[in-house]
Image 1 (cartoon, rainbow, N blue to C red):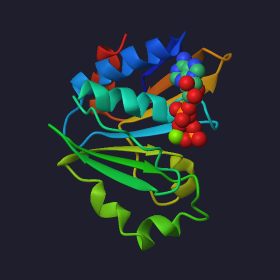
Image 2: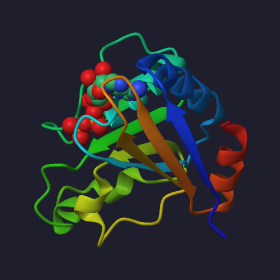
Image 3: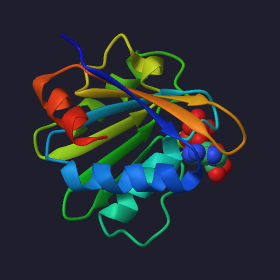
Image 4: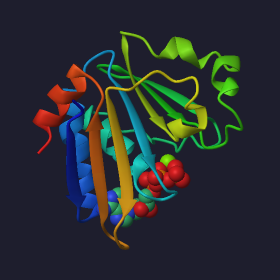
Length: 153
Ligand SMILES: Nc1ncnc2c1ncn2[C@@H]1O[C@H](COP(=O)(O)OP(=O)(O)OP(=O)(O)O)[C@@H](O)[C@H]1O
Ligand SMILES: [Mg+2]
């Protein structure tokens, strides 16, 4: 049965703290989908994860470039499918090979390729609360996802 947890992200600092926590539990093969409206905090959370992994460079929002790969202690694939017009673009771009047991993959706007993408370990759904705060609902879709949820308080 899918496990679920809702976390109140009172400020950007809370999102940064969560991202750091997530960075410590990542394992090769993890597949996370980040959903939520524009500006709801998906990229902010990815940036915090990267920082937690020791990355000091700039994490671009991949909205226009679709994909960025980071070779850190782990390989992180960061996608943003906002500009996709159909699921087929995922296959056409050859992106499916990036979801593998060796790297961590985080996809913003996975609903734009929902027909083709495999089930993730975790869904992160970000909701606007107010200017400073967000709600985050995390839902697990696998045993590995359950394990991650247990570690996120
Ligand atoms: N508690 C919070 N957590 C995260 N971001 C917050 C929070 N409160 C305010 N913000 C602001 O909300 C914005 C989130 O932008 P971000 O680029 O992360 O959104 P996104 O979900 O990736 O949007 P898009 O769908 O356009 O990619 C940032 O400007 C950030 O400063
Ligand atoms: Mg984004």
